Image (tube, rainbow, N blue to C red; front, top):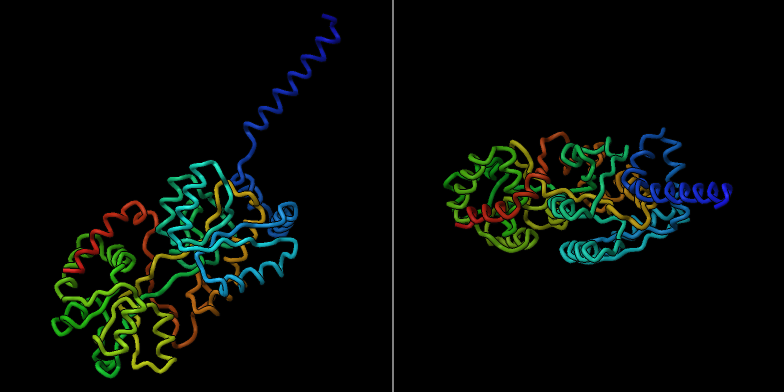
Length: 356
């Protein structure tokens, strides 16, 4: 073989080998975004926008009503008119199951999803979510982020004591866990059947042993347990029983403003928080840079103000701290997502202690 031909052949083989190696060791979307997140703020934003313009859309799996969604997507698309948010709505469990099915089949269709933090464990085990350490995380409350970067919280529901003010005065109403265990409340307390979030917060605060003791003590109080926190609140307003111990704060505020005969108290020594909703990014997003911009928007003060106007308790530290009906500087506790994701079946079984 002529020397020049041999040289050309060797050169071609080298190029092919280098291209194959580049493909094998190409940065994942998570790695690419991690590098962008290290840039100064203006350069970072410019890099995300530049790449997102080529992607043109972002896919959001959203277990939310369309009216609320429209407020977020309209504001986002106004900021980024070159992007279209494609929405797939459904129940949280059905969307979660869809993602699992898609990933098992090697089909990667979603970019982002808002989901309860307790579902993160399942998504991480399936390698269906990535870490995204966006600078916007720094403005979030305690409990709305994790160390790894998977959990980027957007909002949560505070759980308060709601009472019928025709049956109970504010001075008489229970204010703490110890108050709930007093014999005077036997048979008079209501609670949602799905009490896992509330119990997880109790166990996180007091520890497993004392938390289980409290659960057994409440079970002995002959709780009025029904399916659905909203229903329990309505039954208290109707005078069916005088107190609900795990009412949604925003629903209590709405009932009170509507003239229902109820009032509510923030529990002491802390306020349990229903597992935070977080905005996750797919591990194999079709539109990674557009997805990053959408996550940033949802965590930003602008996105969080929309959530606040929708009566959600936002993750942003600077919001929901001033008015009479707001939590202010009271201690709140968001259940540990990693711990209770791994122990979810155990937690569901422990809620049985409340139904004695």
